[in-house]
Length: 323
Image (cartoon, rainbow, N blue to C red):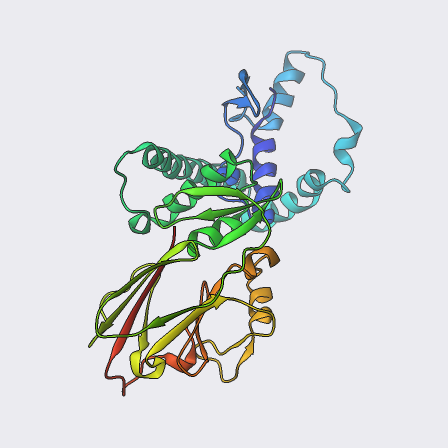
């Protein structure tokens, strides 16, 4: 392939404006394969050479060359960058802009490759480091690699939604939803008819309560003081909850007051703001205290009604994890 250094710089700016990650900003590689055809190798020997150098060589050696007339059509993104944006940047930031950007591309590409290889090694390990302890860059690559294998486009916002909301499903092509569990493994499931469970009432006591329910595991531990937080763990004021807890699926019309908010709002509005798919909402669990007030909603902040404060005497450690 005849891609050269100017092509590389234009591609860098195009991807930068689109918000690309390390792989995209790293640009074209000198050696690669055609996506979907692993036996077809691509070699780009001219990536380090500027276009003007190629033109000068062709002129000096009387090599015939041709330029496509469409290259001057600034309605095309690449040509707009080439003829309008790059000259402006060079005027204000100097002619070394090419070298500076190409150096940045090399740095980003190498650092991306490191994070990607670390993620590949982690995925292949039989006893990997806990996902939560990994560097954010490696976590993102782990999610990204698994999304590609599942045939899901690894868009940044979707990667972040999965990575930062363990156990929350997001919609995917082919009538599926995907979920990242606490161990860092991504799974895809076909959408099925919404399963609504009958409410379950749990009696509180001074002992640890362990309960398998609704596709997950709940551990409720009475304690006199809060301990370290971990994924899926919250702390509530035990006296504000009372002697029993009622757990059920979300229903249209449910209201909730997340911690820090002054008033109750409809859960449906919160779900819409969080972009939680409709098919997922009815499968989410909520917990009500003895008075019937919602104090916990799966995947959201805890409720104001049962938050701990300076007057809390008894704490309730709440840990929920999807199977």
